[in-house]
Length: 390
Image (cartoon, rainbow, N blue to C red):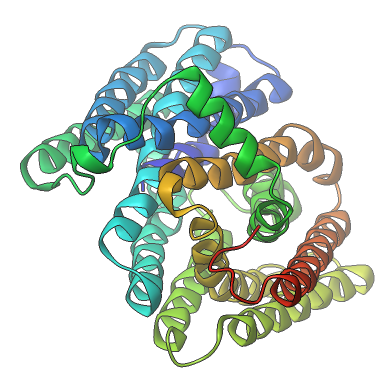
């Protein structure tokens, strides 16, 4: 939950940060881009480090760094310093996202792993629901610096809990060497895999459709819908309600419905929600609840697609599962950083363009998934006895 807390809690405080640090709106927006970029770059290494030195050690170290970075953000006296400490937060925040998936796959496989991934998604979804609401109230009652002090306290509690309760799931005998040649070979093997690019891209572009709205939230909520900084729940509660409900549905479907059929159901919801969003805003001005309701069905479909697709990615290279998890998270995060830094600022002045951008992302994701299924069928016909893809 560190990741969504880092992104969503301070969104309602953008105007206050701008005023306090005498920064432009674009400079404040770039605090999010700086975080996402460093998150994406470092996320490539969390898995490799955990494959070499153990899951538990890397998570504990990352939490300690994040706590220090949160204090630095709270004390920043210029937007440049805030950029720097947001980058430090990004460097450390991705450990839980990547290593958490690897821990699940260390212990479970098949339908139990899919169910647990769905359960984790349900728990994970709590953060985006409460983060902007909590951030809005904090900035209204105190100031924006208190948001980062809250993140510091939360991280210290997590660090203590993980130190006491988190077991090591990767014994030394199963660890991989941490050397340049092995890492270069591993990363090359993963990123050159067409199947990895297609399936990981499916998850990434679906998420980009959501992150477009997350990045544009300060403009979407306050300017287009005319709401206050304590009313971000109008956007985030439907979105997170969809994530939670979709993850619950995926949990129930795991082992009962084949993954391709489950993904098909998810894409029907994704396409229906994003198409309704485009058509509504083509003819009507933004209004509640119609401008936010499609987000529920969009994120529901996204959460139905994600677990099965993620397991397919993790099982492509079982011996370097941590690295694969890193590469998948890197793909998703760098696309989100591009959305935050470039696409959201371009589209956020128009609710119709935001809806059209989301619809475009879903179409790309569907094309990637279809391409992945086609490539898998070709490989299966060529190598019917192969036990893993490409």
